Length: 150
Image 1: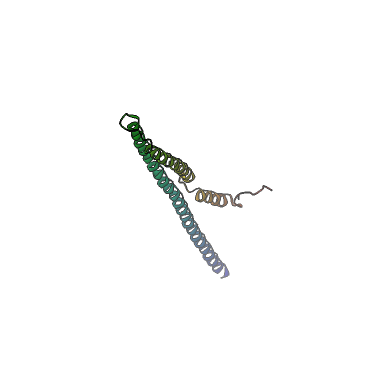
Image 2: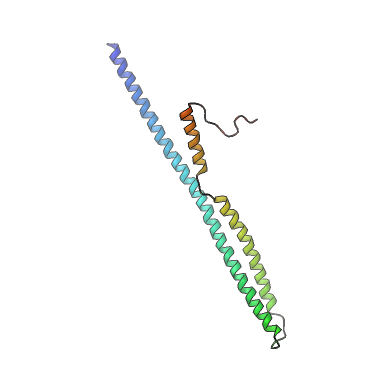
């Protein structure tokens, strides 16, 4: 009579083990999805910040062009025989130069921010999934960064 009881106990243990593995796998998949979401949000935020700074750089460059053109207009006006005071256009050129420098600085910052966020792939989540797959399929320890290097 002990053989049927032992078989039922093994079946119950096996069912419990399968249920536990299934629950842990589901939890693992949910955590990987959350990691991927967090990583994508972080990268999208970096790209958005870079785009905003890039727009600001574009505004500065357009304004610099505007002031340069206005300055040239004043210079042309003073070069014509109509006027002879050279005081106005230097302010326009100075403002154009300042705005152009701000635009260049903002453009470099935007390029750096966009480059840091591109491409928007969840690299950490992919690496974790690869390690999990290697562990499950190989039955061994996952490969960790820096292992074997001393």
